[in-house]
Figure 1 (tube, rainbow, N blue to C red):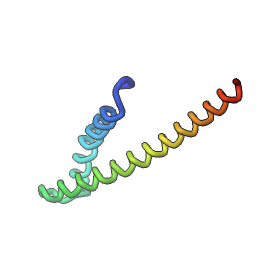
Figure 2 (cartoon, rainbow, N blue to C red):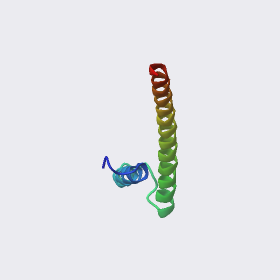
Figure 3 (tube, rainbow, N blue to C red):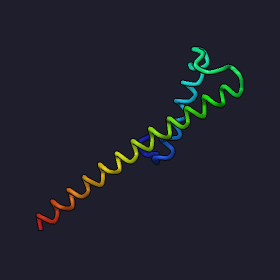
Figure 4 (cartoon, one colour):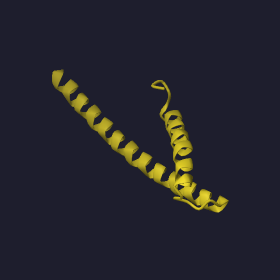
Amino acid sequence: IERWGLMRQTAAYFGIAAVTILPVAYVLRWMDGSAMGILIYFAIFVAIFACVFLIQFFLARRAIRKLNSELQRRQAEER
């Protein structure tokens, strides 16, 4: 899994989370049992998943840029 790209890891995580959470939500009656209820719940799940993913992605990207900037600064000082 460590060798997988970000997209493949995210897709696998999304699949595992959806397969786990959707049946639990159905049993606990967090959604209507109709096809439309399941579709609406899944759409909400996707939206929340996407928001959390994007926030985490941009925070990680900012941290990586900060680290790279610091490394470049230190390398320039050593010369």
